[in-house]
Every structure is written in structure tokens, then in C-alpha cells.
Amino acid sequence: MTFAKKNSSRKPNSWLGLGLLGLVAVFLSGCATGTPLDTLQPEGRESKVIHSLVGPVFIVAGVVMVFVLGAAIYMAWRFRERSSDDPDVLPEQIHGNNKLEIGWTVVPTVVLAVIAVFTLVQIFDLEKRDDDALHVLVEGNQWWWQFSYDLDGDGEYDIVTANEMVIEAGRQADLSITSNDVIHSFWIPRLNGKRDAVPGRMHTLSLESEKPGYFFGQCTEFCGLSHAEMRMRVIVLPPDEFEQWIQDQLADARPAETEAQQRGQEVFEANCASCHRIRGLETQPSDEKIPLVSNTAPDLTHFASRRVYAGGIFELYDDDGNVDRGQLSAWIRDPKSQKAMAPDEQRGMPTLGLDEDQISDVVEYLISTADGPVWTGPRND
Ligand code: CUA
Image (cartoon, rainbow, N blue to C red):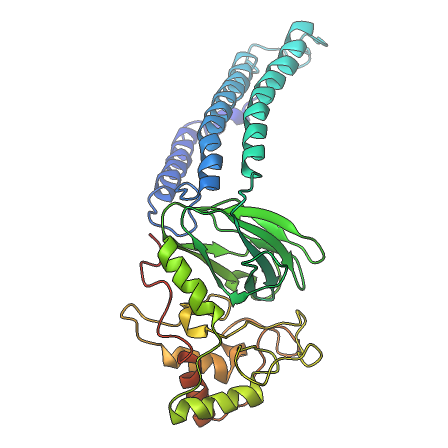
């Protein structure tokens, strides 16, 4: 065979280049810090349990990889074709080597069995639920998440909110996860693994963090045009602040005060209230009227206590705590220009055709629903 020698002077260089490129890519990928979806910086009880397995399993897998790859490279070199070989003579043909075959059956079985024991123990650990857990119903919709709290365990939801789930530091949140339209997947990487939200099914997941904070999440099951723009946050509050949040949320919406707010409330009742609920208003959504596939739209009772809206893609407040009226107006003016939604489908918010005065008034009304956001700390700590 002559072709193997043709480019022999150039080959080592291209392999070296490729290898270096691979190494650089690996190193660069490790440079990102403070990224909001980092599973390797666990902050939750559950994500720490999972993380404690990641290291050991990675080491076992690494050893197996080095061993298998080393053996394969050694074999390829040891039994390579030599120029002295007669191409018409086949190498000695053997079939079966009992010692080897038993070896490569038994060794992986033992390795996997050991990993399985540790994994199973932790799976059961992840399924433990505390008696005093906070119960939250998590519903996926195209393209936003609804969180409903049953505080007294009577089966009725006392608080309904969207995009941001607020939980208490040091207390387990016991989630029941489902969907109102297509399959979504709920995932807060720094607190726990992901769980699919499937219509007609109820899946459970728990979240718990000792440390207060703002935790980022992203829908991880393709669910339509705005799948990539379907985000969620979990806000972990210290117990006293959590109790305050509960009391604030249990109250009905504040009555509109200024003239602009009152006009905004009228615009809201005439145009928005057929889909969006604001507790305390007389006009309320009726099930038949809502023209959406999911049959539901975010409850806006304490809209301004949330930092994000429209599926979590827009921030309502800037770093100084000022409302971004421009973005909120743009969203109300023409939602389909702000977020990927097929124009002819009843998914996502419709364009209402409000005039500029109506938009300005309804913005004033919406931001009068709370004094400011619940979480004013860093967006990702
Ligand atoms: Cu919801 Cu992807």
C-alpha cells in the first residue's frame, strides 16, 4: 500500500492543529462564569444531591474511556498492516476468547451495578416530600408558566401568578407539573433537574434552597414558535419576606387612584379582562370567551410585583427600579412583533388595536397594581 505514505509529511501537522483546536474549545467553554443556567453551580438541596453523583460518575466514565480508547489504539497499532505483509495472505482468523468475553461482560456489569446502587439511593432521596412543604401547581402554556398556590390544603388555589414562582428559603416546595396545551418542560437548573409538563398528566418535582436568590429557568421541550422565549424564574425569599409576599398576594388588586389609572382600568375591563383576571375587578374572564388554545392567560392581579412579563422575556423594571414603559407599551401595542407567534393562530397574546392614549392609560393601570418588584436583588447570584 502506497497511499498511506503519500501525505505522511503533512498529516501530523493537521492532526496537531485539530487536536489543539479541540483543546482550545474545551478550555474556552469552561471560561463562562455566572451563567444563569449552570447545573454545575447547584444551590438547591436537590441539585446538590444530583451534583454529588456527577463527579464520581464522571471519573468512572473517564477511566473507562481511557481504558477502552487506549486498548483500541494499542490494538490498531499492534496489529497494523506492515509493508512486509503479503496482501494475499489473511491474518490468522480466530473466533472467541472465553476469558476476554467473560471479562468484558463482568467488568462493565460490576461498574454499572455500583453506579446503580448510588443512583437509586439518590433517586429515592429526591422523591422525599416534607410534611410542611409548600404546594404549587405548575402549568405550562404557550408560552408562559402559571403558578397556583394552595396554602391551606383545601384543594382551592389561593394565589395565582405567572412567570415568577416565589418560594420560601429553607422550606421545600412540592410542585405538581402539568400543561394546558402541548408538552413543555420545567427546569430551574441550579435548583433541580427538569420535569416534563404533559397535558392530562401530573408530574411531581421538589425545589428547596437555603439561600434566598433569583433562579433562572427555561422551557426545555420544543413547544412551538416561542419555545426559546418561554422562561421562568424562581424567587427564594427569607421566611419573613415570604410571609409578607403571601399577605400581599392574597389581597385583591388595589383600586385605581389617578385619572389615568381609572381610564386604564376601563380599557383593561373592556379589552383585556376577557382573558386576564385581576382579582377585585367586576369584569372577569369567562371560560367560553377566552379564545386561546390553552384557554388561559396570566392572572395580572399583582402584575407590577413581578419583574418579568410576556413569558419572562421582558424586564418590567430597570436596575434603578424604574418601569420600562416603552417596552410594556410595545408589547400591548403589537405582541406579535415582540415575540414569535404565528399571526393566524390563537396562541399567545392577540393584537388588540388600542390607540396610543389607551395603551398609555392601561400601562399606568397595570403598574399601579404593586409598589415594585418582589425581588430587587441581582438577576443571577
Ligand atoms: Cu414550552 Cu418549550
